[in-house]
Length: 386
Image 1 (cartoon, rainbow, N blue to C red):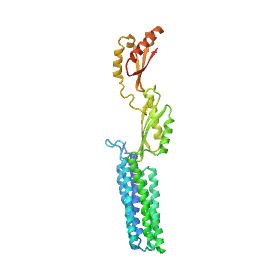
Image 2: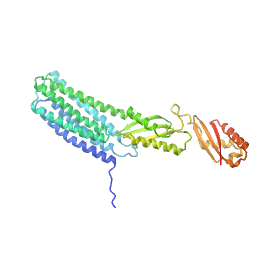
Image 3: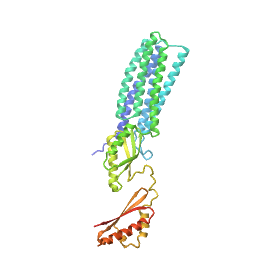
Image 4: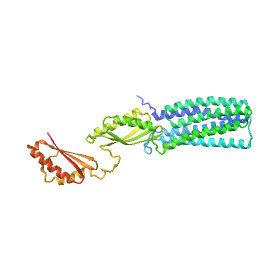
């Protein structure tokens, strides 16, 4: 029987991103070269600017291809949360690249307006600009479909690179038509308008991804949904310290939930696992949840119980206090509750040791007094079991 290698989700995600981007690259190359050469031949400055924009798209396609390859690698020892931030960083680069391309186009067009050296575009420029609109809008829809499917902001940013090219081609058409109609400066003015559009889109992607790099939380609507899901899990009495952040296409959540202080460790763990499962199942972008169990609200002061002794040290000290109490040797179980900066002690003693109620009361009193002499113990409960 042959062991066939099944591609991991990250492998197939990378392949889909690569294929989409390669299709866009071919279109960008053809359009970029076509628009620049046609712009020179047909005297359209706006079309030349538009062609440079298309070639800049080709550059961003290369960034996407390289980033997608590395961002979709599995988590390893040095990157336990995976490599998703590579995609985030690349989105910043794509946004900044858009801004710089746009600034260059705007400066060139402004200089032409000042010097009044206008170009007179021909019909060929008009036809090429119209072809560009159709081609780039098609690439935008194709790429954005996969960006949403793969939850990739980087692919979405690249899709908008295509759409900004499509928008700029629309402005170019308006500019060429205006210049042909006798408004000579309209072609250069159109190039500046295109630049402003591109700068705005570039800033949007760069800023949102920079927010992700500094661990900005998820949208308020998603946080409200997280609150509702956690509150609906049976056994959760309250919640606090909810923290969220993005990691590429994934979201990570940390939360403290409060449960009944008397629950067993395993029941508290079961409630926490249910919270984790419900969040991952119901909110698509969440890939991991860290749930901290609290027996009380420690939101205002998390250090209240930090200095209290642990079981081994506490019991060693209590046994010193119990030396004169013979019933202490029959204690079968001791449960400790660390609450509100004090330790609550529960003692369990077999009922067969005592035959009279008076004896039970006396033993309880002796043990309670001995325990309460310890400065860290706030409450004692003696239970007699059959």
